Image (cartoon, rainbow, N blue to C red):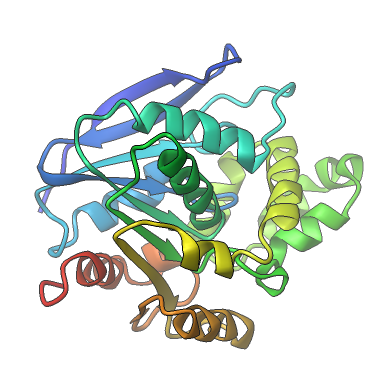
Amino acid sequence: MSTSFESLRLEVPGTRAHVVGGRTPGSGPLWVYLHGLGCAGSRDWPPVARSAALAGRASLWFDLLGFGQSERPRDYSYALSEQASWVAAFLAREAQPVVLVGHSMGGTLALLVAEELVRAGRPPVALLVAEPNLRAEDATGSAVAAATPVDTFVAKWPQWVESMSSPMYRESVRLADPVAFHRSASSLVRVGQGLIPRLAALPVPVKGYILGALSDEATRETARQVAEAGIPVVTVESSGHGFSEDNPEGLGRAIARLVEPGKG
């Protein structure tokens, strides 16, 4: 099923830089997708938006600054808190209720955005996170990048790109700016720990965690702790961390199942 996106170009407040995004018309709340480190919403979300479970839904994606098709200012911090502030300010103006869907770094960012929206009196109707960084143990590639001096990381960027085993992720990383990647990774390592209690306490009607059936033991332990905190966990079969590449239909079903039990 085809899904057409209206192209968006938004200036990030406090900068002269622009992010690229896309929007589909449709029914129900607005499903907002935030991508992971080195990824791009323009590559990751369309296959999921076209899935049978989500077809016909209104949705919105961004390529965050430094990634995908968006601009990559060198004087931007790329801190998750700064990214969360502009995303939340933009979404607070939306007339439709919002469902936040975040993958990996985007899941951690989605939690920060949800907290900002709650403080603004515009809480999302749902927050769904697919293997975000919630514990220090969730940092893998981000920890390696953050531990590398930035000059060294930039100099070795071509080797870093080619070291990615997933073809789809490798091409997404190739589109990213190395300084943006390094600063984002460093922020993610700092922020992405001790977050399960914050996720559990967040006053959002629907919350859920999405786990890949093929993901590693550290990620499965995070999912166990999230479930123990009372948050539903749904597993996507035949998928590891790269849901959009491994099983976009399954990710669509998991998202729908968490928000509308019995329909996914």
